[in-house]
Length: 251
Length: 379
Ligand SMILES: Nc1ncnc2c1ncn2[C@@H]1O[C@H](COP(=O)(O)OP(=O)(O)OP(=O)(O)O)[C@@H](O)[C@H]1O
Ligand SMILES: [Mg+2]
Image (tube, helix red, strand yellow):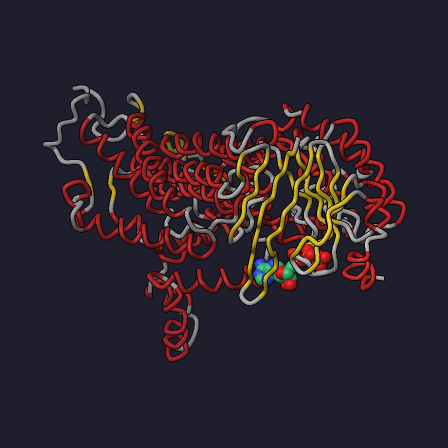
């Protein structure tokens, strides 16, 4: 079954056709990678899924329901979480708080009026957040203010914020960019483990081919706003179109 | 986060002690008289409430005095219609302020940043003008709303006091005037009535700040967009914070009317809205004690400076030769009496420039220097 169905999406920024008739279909439980050179429109495509941008035309359906016109928090509430390319974390808050917020939003819905509830009553959410932070290797930085973390740690925190929500669909925008080799490998393991154990569908944008080929069940190659190939990993490397558009220029 | 439970209890205890001992503490500074003490508590509540909105979410309302003003009107109406009992007046003050903050908040929160501030300011000016024009039957226009002999006061008992009271306990009564290091300290019913609410207001604000709800508000301040991509609908959180702080303002306005059963539109003027902004920033926005400290600071200096007239100035500089004396008086004159706002403006500039964390920020770093601990984070 296709959990995410993207048909004929166009997006234009002034004179630039950032997305040109993009089609994508992601089957449930799969890890679907989107690769392509810088400026191909990959992040723009994700922005169209989460309500940050509205495509000029086309359709985006998730579990059979259109995501277009929905508010960002509504899209998240139906089970779509995003891990951003440039970390968008709550820099003034602690690491633990950064992860507890999405956890609470997942449990309580978009709004809950409980101004006098004590934080220590939220042990469940706290434990859940700590579990995820342990998976991701940030368990010794719980009380650290997010702004004082290294870039790599911020990326990992971003990922923890997405994972803690147990989303149905997780959108990852270059999750390993700026990470050390060891952290990248750990990230691959975590994502593999979570994909297998919880059956989370993932769309992952990645430049690191090692990550892509370790994880992806299917790959779409985006170049200049157009999907030029969509295929299983084994067929991607040898595809001349890909080599010309992407691998040729990137390597 | 875990140890905050104990430090919060200590903070609350410290706060209660300071508030209860208020008349003693202020006696040496010449501030131990009911009117000023009551203002401390009332504006302390106002600023604590304002800080829930501004300190936590970063949304700067420039019209918060409206809620204080309508709270006062609501309270005085209860005195006029029911009796001099303060409880119905306070309930009414909070309800009316809550109602207005729902309406004004709902509309103003369609925008953020400077546009939000301007919308609140526009509402405040509108309300101020309405109070002087079409709403005069309710507000009594420029005279201000007050109690007249022919007011119905349906529930006023035959032998209950003809002044604001809590079941007979008169607000204006001074029940103890001890000497304290040669200064008189005045213990007044009204002050302790306000102080009771100040402590409750402080405690609730502490609970709100530490709650998951408060965490969401702080997340709004840090990155509102991210919060919505995290599945949180930020607008109802903002509206809740706005209404809570509006109700705090209403409580303050109601208490003010309980201390002195009058209400005038000038309480809603933009300068009054600006004052609570100053109090909060001066004391330290986003901190627990800062807003109360800022409120006390401003009200104290207002009381001191605005009492200084030319006569007082002449007596200060009397030791100088006549020409010099007149010269000094002429120089200081613009800064005192009615010109005290000039002094306030200067003080404010100095604090914003030299103590970006406000008075509390300054005290904290001073404490760190004195205890020799150069730690940056609070543990
Ligand atoms: N909000 C915007 N307004 C105008 N132009 C934009 C906007 N967002 C993206 N673009 C442009 O659209 C094109 C695609 O950008 P996008 O960020 O989607 O690329 P990408 O594939 O994610 O690249 P990278 O690998 O560098 O992240 C770029 O040329 C970019 O400058
Ligand atoms: Mg990108």
